[in-house]
Amino acid sequence: RLRFSSRRWITNTMRVDLRSDTLTKPSAGMLSAINTAVVGDDVYGEDTTVIALQSKIAALFGHEAGLFCPSGTMTNQIAIHLHTRPGDEVLCAEGAHIYQYEVAGASQISGVQIKLIKADYGILTASQVEEEINEDDVHLPASKLVCLENTHNKGGGSVYPLQQIKDIRDVCKKHGLALHLDGARIFNACVAGGYSTHELGVLFDSVSVCLSKGLGAPIGSVLIGSKKLIAEGKRIRKRLGGGWRQAGLLAAAGIYALENNVERLSEDHRRAEIVARILEKKSFVKEILPVQTNILYVRLEDYRRACDFVDYLARHEILSGGASKKGFVRFVFHLDISEDMFNHLVSF
Image (spheres, rainbow, N blue to C red):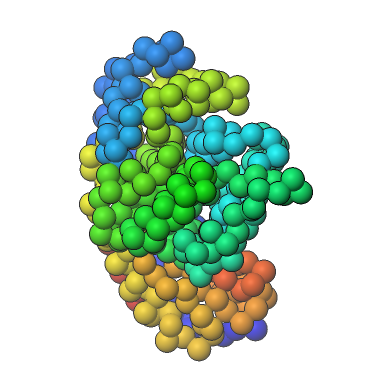
């Protein structure tokens, strides 16, 4: 079994929760925005705060319209349904959220097949995409959609260079494929990649923009695209049970997050890098995936040792994302990790 220092990282009264950036709770300012939100019935299109959020995000990313949904899984699945027909094929990188963590939604809801492409840290190249597009052959499903994930969770929070996306966009146009972005941590990508939301957004036919991860909103993602695409998307959202009423309470939290919590994301990135530098000196750590944003993946020798590490941390009130079968342990940094918590974390 692994032997760790007996020194405690933190006090029993403090808990550092690095399982996910979905664990954040609304701040006082966000709660005030929720409390004062003007609401209406969104199914009737009468919630002005929802309308404001949808318009704000669409404009940020250079699109015409937006659709506020309960989750990024729903926005991704709506997008897949909009861009394909049953029997078509969707291309994405190995480890993509739409394949690995959306309960086979693409096959169940849209009747499509997903083709996985092996890519370094989940970042596809244009040549890889073009190579996997099927020929016009009666034996093969029609390749109709490419889905990118930026940042890529399983790749360690990896970030697409903007030119690489432009090259993939050109391949999609050449072959008549749509291009969708799973932007679960899209603002982390923009901050780390050094490009604007508009520069990134206009390269895609549709984008899922999550508000409940690094930005700290309690719930919600917005699907953006053309007016025609989003009008049909609203029908699919209703079919999936995603129509909601006074959702302006949640939309107000999203607007607050956009206006207050984007610039600080670089602090989460900095903290992830600091902890990575500390852990890379530990003999029990075999590999650390390159750290670009707020996600840190550390690999131990095997699953059992990774479980030992996770258990050790938990006994000292440090919560990680658990151990994978390949021996990886994930840590995700977010705005609810205070300076005191972080100082305790790095003091071991």
